[in-house]
Image (cartoon, rainbow, N blue to C red; front, side, top):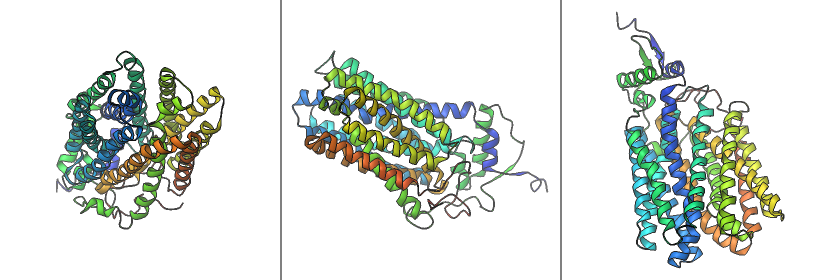
Length: 463
């Protein structure tokens, strides 16, 4: 009788009661440092390519392969680690992937030749590929529904901090050490990942994942730990359940395969297209950004300074998107920022005046990174807990496929015509924006937990 009298609370109600506090801020900071470290690893090669070409006398196409190698590793890592996180839990993947990325970065700095550097960039990407989607899965599962979108976009803003640091390191170190400066920069960029690995070990497993596995007691223990960190008192004794009429202990068999079955297939297809076209444009431009400024007549230092300014412009892009996703909603904000990216990328291509071109590039950076923030907040809300990490991993893998194609495509297109290359990427942004408009709004909704959960926002369908 005593057991029957225990109050039964939904997981979403408990998470909303715990609210946004010290624990969530720590989690976002820990994940954010890792995101900054990952951004440095992804974008640094674009800054370092001229120095590596000069040091090893490699061709532009070979330099493009250094970027491609990272994305090959990221693609494999995103597919594999997302699937593993849905099978064995978020925490192990959350901890291990950042360590792999940091070790790969350190080894890259020590590479004795071009071929070895290619191999170490694949290893680095393999870690980053798992870190990015799983970070978002575990963070989303600890956030209250009313503020989730805003804080997920804020987490993405750490990418801009990593970009700023990467540009600053390249600007400060490369001119002082022309022969080994690129090695120094790569070594420094790996250090935040090592720090993040050490701190990540204190983050508990997702209570939402634990409950979907039928581990109610473990889930309650984590929730009490989080509540204590936030100075929130939970009931002395309670039963925990998922969404109404959804029993615990349900998990998706073969989570990656479930993404391509009803009711998730439409979600997966449309999200895949948005991630691909946004990534094609973003990586096509930003991995070659210093070279693009050189093509437009800047010297090496001027190219670095312009790239640094564009990195700074990303921060207000994120912050404005973080505010708008809770005002306009995810779908409209994402589409608007993608269209803005398209407009200013095209203006960057056709405006001849150096000042006007730089202003267009600043606004291109503002809107494109704001779009990334919206997309990273939107995607985990469209997948249930049982396949959320796999869904994020698949979407991230589509971005990495575009990342493999984009640097090689840029090397050829820029060789033919810089305005042509930028126009192609403007069209890519525009296509992504049009597809985003087909989406269903998820603002304010609780996260779905099982694939078959009735009423879950699990399909990206026409409004």
